[in-house]
Length: 364
Ligand SMILES: *Cc1c(COP(=O)(O)O)cnc(C)c1O
Image (cartoon, rainbow, N blue to C red; front, top):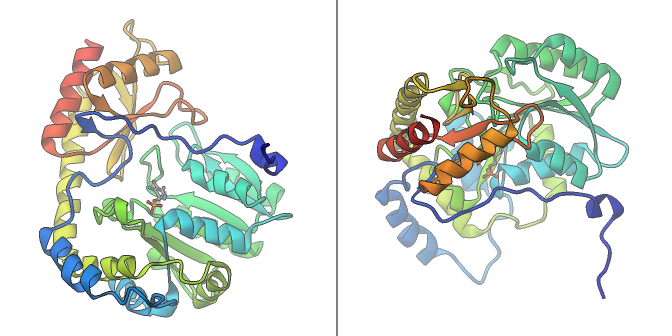
């Protein structure tokens, strides 16, 4: 026999991002290069070989949190680490959301904000971004007034659009959240690729946390490590909720060791930003609509062969055409308002050239 899940879970779709075996994989915004060899070697000797495997790991992950704090100029008490920033988001919603509470999002945005909200039985108040995917303060006010959320999510640079919310807009959203006792979560999974960060707004008296991840910039998607920086009271709350010993010893060590390679990572970010601008310029010569990106990916919508605006069916055709040429990108048609849009991750110059050649082949 089968046991039924909760009614709302039975009705849910899981989170889907197809993994297909291809030559050029540009669909999940990973870093195109492995981390520096000096890091993997140090992790083998200083991490895997020296872990006390029969003991539970440091429950408070003090060394890791201290290293992350040093990166951002804050003490360990203002840092919460978890298994990917997705677990950070989940812990936030388990702590500040839940039955009888509401989370606000402005679509289109990262699907897991509303998905994890629903899983934790948090109601979702959905706002809309403007036609150019910017955030209007009137729409923010409407959603905060009507939804009275206890948690509000921004994502900057936004996934999947790449659009960066200007610092003055984020500051104003924060002021309005403060007025209604709502925690503002700014998801900065792609923060290092952008010119602005909400980290500057952090203050012990403000209801703001900023989430980041090792998955993208730090070339460590396989490690599942993310974190937030925020006020100490928020970090204390989260530690009450998250499972004890949730961060294994090797992961803690991996994060700590990776942070010793900051310069190498900063160089990679610079290279990826330059490569993004090259790809944007090349896309400009093809029959597609595209949006300005502050991330390591670009959202674009191919025009139909007759020059008209692309639709979901044509987007799917182009996606399949690229796949037939062994290039995998993300089909964003299932996101609200992104019918016919595809998202390409910035890869190595060779991978990006393969993508551009395949796209040109499909479209012309
Ligand atoms: C990739 C991504 C994350 C999650 O990453 P983890 O691998 O769980 O750290 C979080 N937010 C956004 C917007 C992302 O694109």
